[in-house]
Image (cartoon, rainbow, N blue to C red):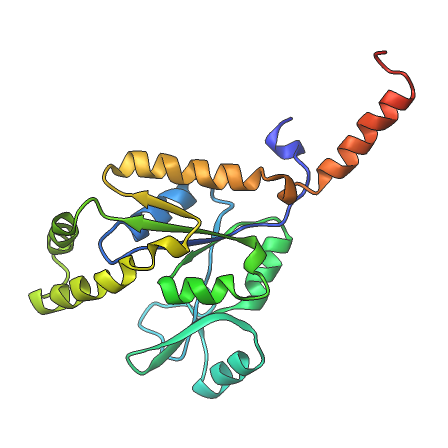
Length: 220
């Protein structure tokens, strides 16, 4: 059966988490490049837009009052306060996307992932955690970026220990030693999850049609 002829299905909520420097952003881009139908969850934030940022494309920009109301009404899949600003994932656009059969990718930490898994859409979640091959390599990757001061890198390294401690909470865990191989495994996970029996609603009708053929004596 060709891909276009496959039965309709609800989309996946793909959670990708890792300590900083383990390759989460790179693999997120590669996964979306492999299949452009995977959409990236656009976060909401209370911080002001930066030059060139577009509302609804880069972020959903909200006032603090509106953000808090959205959380109180249970319309945020996950949220957190970071350096005095609120960030979160609005549920409505995600729900529309998965109902249309589109997979939605979340680049969140373990706390955000936990909130999404415990949400009303948790049954659609596939969670993946990326581990570095070693702590020495993780530190080397952060330094190689050339984006952060030694103090910031030290802070990220301290935080990474807590993040890594949550690896067992995820459905899948990949060690990102070889980027190409890790990407291949990530694609395999998404493909397999799409093909789960419970995510192929058209199978019930197909099996019914097969049984009707049996009853008519086709092939017997």
